[in-house]
Image (cartoon, rainbow, N blue to C red; front, side):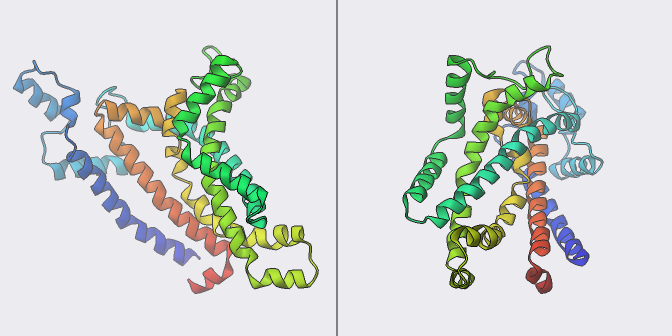
Length: 317
């Protein structure tokens, strides 16, 4: 196991290097550069050159890249060109806010998806299956920002049941009840956004497992449908779900950009959107690289979980 993990980690290093190069190259090819966000048309060329020198933007692209990578290896993502704040500090303050929103929403969606997917798969073609599949189709078709605005209008504006912006009410930053009150609407929106694809994944896996020979054997021994479904099919149907769980790791940070922005939640989403709007390229590059790194880490986590859960895979390794 340790040898396999080490091998996968070593394979991930060149991938991270390639991703960092791609992120940097994409920003370099953007139609506007960082100087455009810091200068005005009436500035003299000498002033512009001084600004470039201050931020190292007068250097060749490859030198800028190596300086950027050296900073990242020290845990320093540089400074925002707009706010002049440390990007590392901004991320450290915002990532927990995103996690406390996305994590409960994803876990709740996963639990509901397992239950509804099993029910739909066990009743393939029947009314329950059609209702659950119809809900999934509608959920996939509805944009999360539109759903968020509908929830804000109905439950926030018309009924006044929940706050519609922010993470806390001013003056109640230490109140847990106020925090959960703000959490409800964005969490429900995210749960509904995550749910349809997970349901279809579990349903498809369940249908495949119900066609296996071991199900026929259990039926021949007189096992009830519920016992077969929850004692045997459930365990095997959820094994492929390990991939989804591993790949969900990036979603803990980048899975709520739109929802966070609509609800004014102080997470990564609004920070990233404002960076794009302000041509704040150091912030954009940092978040792109961080997100890509989480994808690689998620793949590694999925492989490790597979080895732990399925002994046959461990023997093949």
